[in-house]
Length: 453
Image (tube, rainbow, N blue to C red; front, side):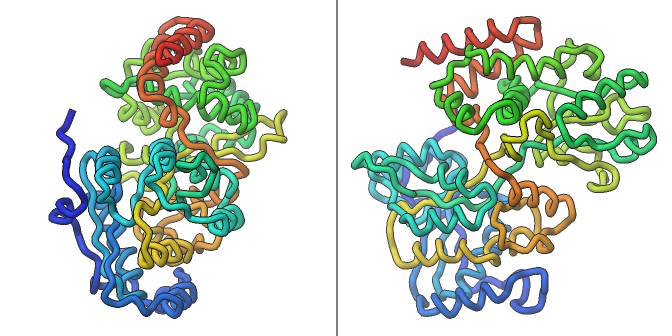
């Protein structure tokens, strides 16, 4: 375990970066991809805060921090506020330490709604108000879902809106090589039924439809949990998914067992996976997509999140050498709409102030999203952000999946207790591909959960 910095924000400011008179990445008014009207309107409303300071503590470091600083530069330029942004390697623990010590930043950013819920219950978060919740519901794809992830019980036991969504991650994707599909005459499936038909056709043609790798060192098994989560959202309504994540629906419930077995139709079918079933648990998830690019291809499809191109061969051009499609839903279950599995960062006020409230207003402007969109590694469900602002077509299409989703759910294993979501669930899925039945695996995970009580 790495040492946690047991210091407050004041000390962390020694390692902070400041956004004040930073150069703007895009000159206002010159790049038509960005919504400069929203920027000018914000500037007129909040341009009288010169000389004030705002402290922000969040998860972004390295390249992501530089990208976030480019966004903050516009906030500072419009308002005159000097922003001091800080982070640390163990930022989740640090936010808890700082709030308990009474020395938090004004704005805290996390990707863990469960941790924010705990802080709200202890009275460490500032309510953002029903008006902002209503705004998110109206302006975000699957707005109800995003509002739910920012709604917690306060210290008084009453529910309130505490966390605003900014920057999303997308998991419900299947990657493939267009040239391989074209040469074989395959079409991208738009239903889960068609996905099975395509998999069977690939086998019939002498190929292997899937590359699946669960290896990840001490975290081996996690890619399988993502599969099960996506399938839960495609087999049942979002409320059922929520009950499962909270354990109101037990792990050995027939519905959960059925979802695990649905994953088994892919991962435990020796004809479906590169290397056979024995290779599923032993193949590292970073190596798994390489089969797409072999000549001849070792597999035709790979289900993984939007980050996976980082592990594609160097020089791979997205949209040409590799592409994706939305993991489809069942034609037999149209009532479930278009669910999306992913994650996202949430912005909360851990100390109220006029600059902090102005920052929340800034995040409601398209420009606060578009500046990052136009660079890299940023997706948003905000429907008013211009799709053409995305740096490339791949990101634009991923963003479209978010803005058109009917429901959005966070990675379930990340919301479960650590010993389950990052423990028994991982190992249980490895046991499952190793031969255990879904019922036995579900019962084992449930026993581990019961043991926490």
